[in-house]
Image 1 (cartoon, rainbow, N blue to C red):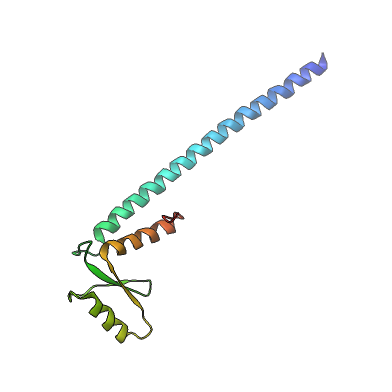
Image 2: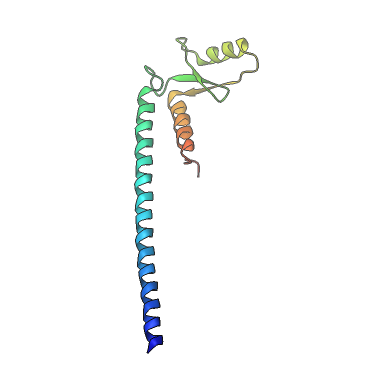
Length: 122
């Protein structure tokens, strides 16, 4: 009889611990979900701001010159090739690449997402 009471107590404790573990797991999962939503909201807000504020006054099909995997140049000269050539001549060792504003925005988007550990390349 005494053994049955001890077994019941042990089973009760195991049951309580199991229920507690489920509750804690559910709470942690909810916290992770909320944190992920916050990050997604922050990313979306930042992406909208980037799209609005990057390259003001330029249309997505206009050309810019990317300098050494870094910043971008734009000139009132409509010939991006001339801008690229002159900048490379003035700045020895600098390599430039011509691209559209839309491509440049996509680069910034990828860099932003990478800073959050998210990759668009799969």
